[in-house]
Image (cartoon, rainbow, N blue to C red; front, side, top):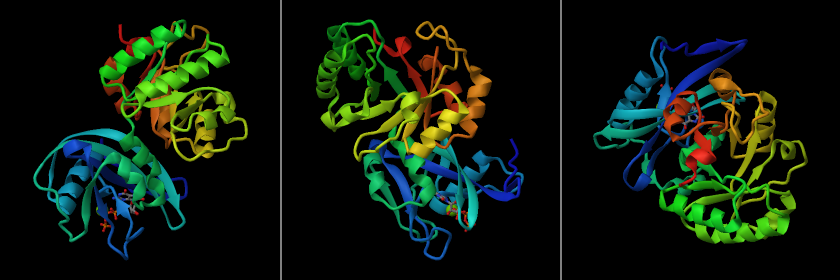
Length: 320
Ligand SMILES: Nc1nc2c([nH]c(=O)n2[C@@H]2O[C@H](COP(=O)(O)OP(=O)(O)OP(=O)(O)O)[C@@H](O)[C@H]2O)c(=O)[nH]1
Ligand SMILES: [Mg+2]
């Protein structure tokens, strides 16, 4: 698709930028240092540059990475799009994950480059717009939500199987359990997940202090309550509308689920968004978002094309 960059959105000129999260060995990611004197100079960045008029974002990405790093892109997929207003400039960062490339990556323009582990990214200074990119680069493309109606024992057994299959992000959802049983289950699940996957818990925010290693997944209702963000684990939220996506962004959550994309057995009463509306909502959302609701792993490429971080699932992701 031809680019409209720089595009006029109302009165604001938005500079369309193609940027790359380049994966190398051991999942390391290439970052480069912006020359002092340039916009956001001296900070680290994901390599890339402006999309030229008439150029597609994929061509721009390939051209910029050849110019700046001397590499040829062989495989890439959309990761996240971030619209950001700096005091002096508005950008649309169109970020792609480069999963395969040829050539030896080096700073062609003399800029320092570094291959860093995803979890080390938060230790580098990036431009203000980049935080969601860092989160998107660290998060996996599948988010498992545990099915309801299972005993704690069955939940732990299923969780162990899911971890063995490589699941890296899990939400412990067990609405049928009383509070004490849920908290006990959470403690055991955290032990299972340690060093293998991130565990997201649900419940009142004052429980968080009991589970410092856990992430927290807020309900849409909790998004409307006063929120105290704690340092440490991930903070996520369940969103179903444009308003909730906006509240999540304002609350500073790290990622969201957007649901229901299709109608599901677990939530029969909720009207589905459908793919078209889900994609439209993602266009306006700067946070990594997992699509949820009647989707399975086979819908991953469609979700990525719609602008999602990936797919979240309950039954379809639960190991048999
Ligand atoms: N490449 C890149 N640009 C970023 C990032 N984050 C961010 O805010 N930007 C902003 O996006 C714009 C694109 O910048 P660029 O300087 O790379 O563009 P370019 O390669 O075409 O450079 P040029 O202006 O020297 O031709 C800049 O205003 C920059 O500050 C990032 O992670 N990577
Ligand atoms: Mg550049």
